[in-house]
Length: 383
Image 1 (cartoon, helix red, strand yellow):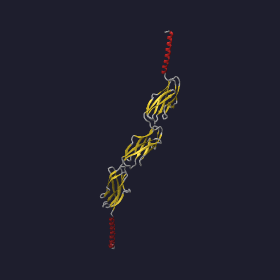
Image 2 (cartoon, one colour; image 1 turned 135 degrees about the horizontal axis):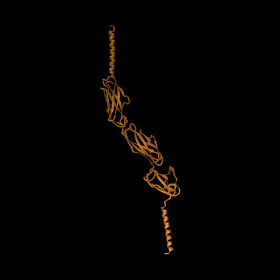
Image 3 (tube, helix red, strand yellow; image 1 turned 30 degrees about the horizontal axis):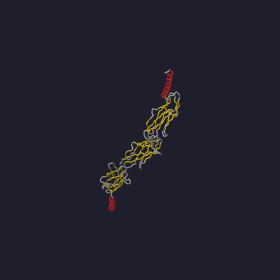
Image 4 (spheres, one colour; image 1 turned 90 degrees about the vertical axis):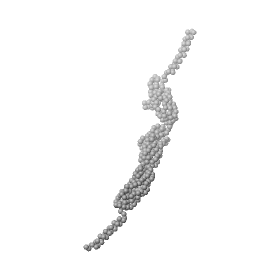
């Protein structure tokens, strides 16, 4: 092979090697401007707010002014880019330096479960991000409590602690209502201040205290109290339960409330009595008795009341017989109604009068005495 041929082959080889080496050098050359964040794929719940810290890195030898934008998100997804407290649309980076900005993405409450992709751009630099929504989203209100059932007597005030959650994208003003039976009192206290409405921010919650007071003479039992929080677009209902154990109270009196009478010694007097069940529980086996003066007799018709419901009144006749030896004056007799749970009593002042016959005897004695004196004056007056 001639020398010229060898030179020609060497030149061909050199021309073939140079392009190959240039191609390899272009593949390893770093990109001029890049965007970086470590959180490229995260899993969140509906309504969550995602805060990204994004670095804009300038690998060039020149100042870079990059326009910032986000693409791939629907209108229901809201975002904002900030740095130093300012909203950004463009960021300037010096050569061989980086700048960091914050990207906040709000996941809507009403969103389907799945994976969502979007891209952050700074000029020609692209940063693909992926958000996985872990559960199906809602647009609703929740009214909840950890203790929906309480127990006490009819004089108790039942206080429930509830939470009102606004799982919507807007601020809501809720009207607070209760469907309680007649006589019940229900008071709402948002943030522990009495009110009839509560204002809750979007995707936020508020504590609502509910005070429930039953009627004074309510019967023992279990009562359902539905409460509701409503706006024009959303509402939620919560059912509370109050178990009234009942109270035992009883009153003994007369139909007119008069606790005095009179009787003639040795005579019988009938007194009308009323026994009122002023509590909230059923009274059983009410026994009647009396503390009376010596030699007096007291009986009752009927002598026992089997049942007396809450709020009802039973009528009893007390038969009082005064002693024949009773002297005129005032006497005290105590009537009593007793059950194993509660007692009631009433003191009666009894004025005793002498019998009519003794009045006539007294008149006759006076007349006889006047006659005897007149006779003595007539017979012995001259002497």
